[in-house]
Length: 171
Ligand SMILES: [Zn+2]
Ligand SMILES: [Zn+2]
Image (cartoon, rainbow, N blue to C red; front, side, top):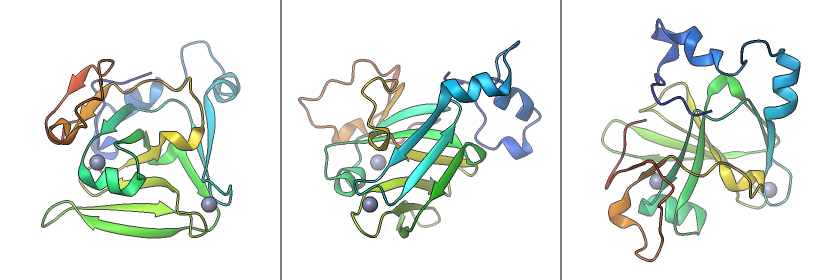
């Protein structure tokens, strides 16, 4: 489920309980939700894994040049989840880049094969971006947000995205 009014800082939000309540629909036990919506992502060599409980808060396609370099593909796909939804296990290394003079993005990647599994931006505390490709699941929900479209490869159609921004988009 995509929470369009999701607050990026749930710790300070009076709506914190509402923001996470969607993980357990009325009448559903935690067990049934977990069996339906727990996902595991792997790096290319399977040495690093990420476990995600529940659905992503939002799914973002990012066409920025940094994501293009990081992935080696022409855009990055991130499932943005709450910190408490995500567990990373295995050996990893970190790479930090500056977004601007005061904000960074730190990615955690496998030291053996180089796949990035997760990243955190200081602009969005409490959120973790998880590489959608790590799930190796062609049924994964399509992006509802497409950002940095000013550097999108021209032939790529992002029609499914509900919201599109030329640069960074609010989410
Ligand atoms: Zn690996
Ligand atoms: Zn990007």
